[in-house]
Figure (cartoon, rainbow, N blue to C red):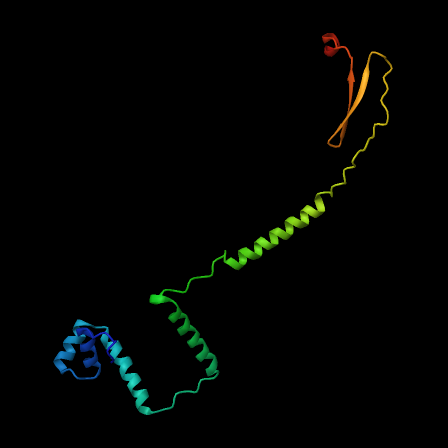
Length: 168
């Protein structure tokens, strides 16, 4: 027993003395009456004691390295979890799974866009050049205003449009 072990309880001390046959016959009988389950424990203890007295060598383990690795793996898992709690299960949404799912969604979106959305056609730009301006009526005057890359034809002398014409 080292300093880190818990001290024995009175029951454990008495059980140890009972199994070591350190109790008197009256004390052993009283202990058996109080705790009838210790009789089976005593029989198992005596059987183990006889096997150890025979001195027969323990059977050799086949695949001992496998069992050692298994035991070491369990011990490492027990040491890794604090206070004897089971090690946490890996979650469904780990960071690497989320990154992979995001990349897959991005590729799927780009593929769908490229296949289903038609490419834009170049919009033709129209170009018109005003070469001459003539009016068929002498009362109308036409003039060209060219500012900021845009040409506007202004016609002076037109009569306003009647409201009846606008409604038609």
